Image: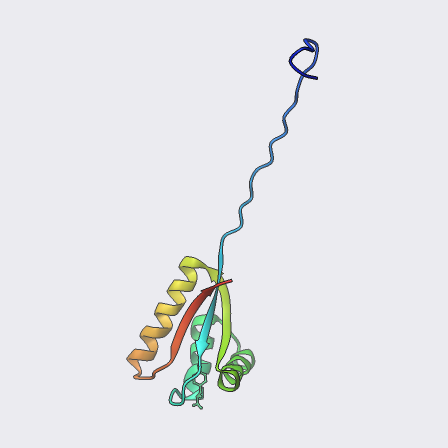
Amino acid sequence: PGENDPGSIVVTKTRAKTKRPNLYRVLLINDDYTPMEFVVHVLERFFNKGREEATRIMLHVHHHGVGECGVYTYEVAETKVTQVMDFARKHQHPLQCVMEKK
Ligand code: TYC
């Protein structure tokens, strides 16, 4: 095949680019004042965890200082952070929720 081969046909295969979205971890930060039960409730309500998983994550944050609640695309992660921060403020707890790129 080539320019000097009049009988040849070049077949170009194209491959659809399946680009994966950037993913973000949503993290809870430990503090000394937010009640454990409130954190468990947050994990159930905003991160769709069952009571057992929610309790496991809360205790992980309590003991290690930080822990993952879930992994989401940018807009979803941003929404979760805003929902948690608004809910914590409304109940006057200092709970902090942040997102970080994976
Ligand atoms: N350390 C808190 C307490 O002892 C509980 C807690 C857990 C607070 C997780 C925040 O993200 C947090 N009441």
